[in-house]
Amino acid sequence: DADVTQTPRNRITKTGKRIMLECSQTKGHDRMYWYRQDPGLGLQLIYYSFDVKDINKGEISDGYSVSRQAQAKFSLSLESAIPNQTALYFCATSDRAVETQYFGPGTRLLVL
Amino acid sequence: GQNIDQPTEMTATEGAIVQINCTYQTSGFNGLFWYQQHAGEAPTFLSYNVLDGLEEKGRFSSFLSRSKGYSYLLLKELQMKDSASYLCAVRGGGATNKLIFGTGTLLAVQP
Image (cartoon, rainbow over all chains, first blue to last red; front, side, top):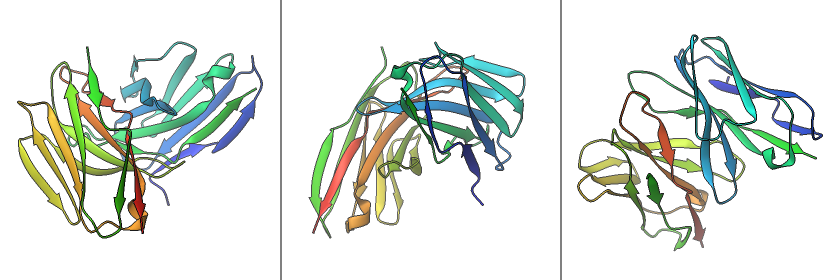
């Protein structure tokens, strides 16, 4: 079983719709991250959380919100999706001691 | 500002050696990571350097010079499956320890 899972893996939605991307991990890590990846731009940090009661904005948080429901779960929401949020979204986790980030398989989102 | 530079693309021959360079300018430094990413897949961790010098892991080695803001990833005995993007990422200073990623180097291994 994968250590970091993301659902859905692919999603097509329309402008203005609210959608949620979910991430779960079985690695026991306390830190979780959401990134988006666009061609030619590399990985950009959206939000990160160092524990259940800690939520922090990353470089590009506008238009997004997150929820850390438990140590193992970190969800990303697009309140009102727009076409330029079309991208590949990755969740990642890390352990406080080591800090290497481990990535989920990604969610490919298309906003029409 | 914070900046990480890598070549956009490289081409190499199966069985050869290739070196992918990364230069960085960041606010603080707490380590440099290399990740491999095949098209449409998740980045996977390759190596981590926090002190100057060379770290070797099988066919892959990574070098760091903190004074020069420079790292390279060395891939030996190239295989076709090594065709992928290679991402350089720096962990900055301060309490957050966030990773800053370069845009990646797309390596094509040819027969």
